[in-house]
Length: 120
Image 1 (cartoon, rainbow, N blue to C red):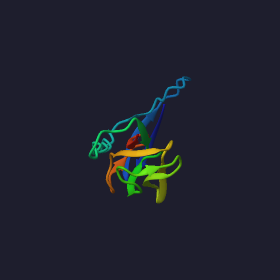
Image 2: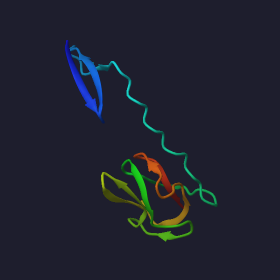
Image 3: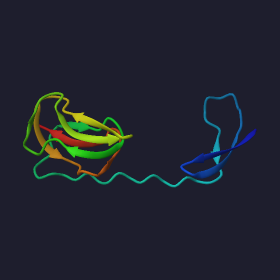
Image 4: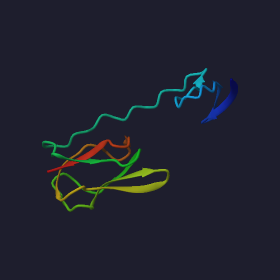
């Protein structure tokens, strides 16, 4: 067994690692890390949600809403822009359609795969 001290975001964790020969991780922190903040509940826009989901490709923060409910979009058009690691990343329409709902607001945190909007 080997003992290590790992610092994450300024917090030091003492861990003991045992080599077992298996692929499963064996490190167990002695101090539990704070739980990450949960993403806010989606905010539904007026009207029913559409059948085509527009999902975030990365975790980040909603930087800009490029469309509004009722707008017509073509495949590849930006619907929402998120900011991740100081980069602006457009979340694009997966197909042609009409924006049925915007499920986020500027400044909201989002997770990878979270539905940010829907299309009809």
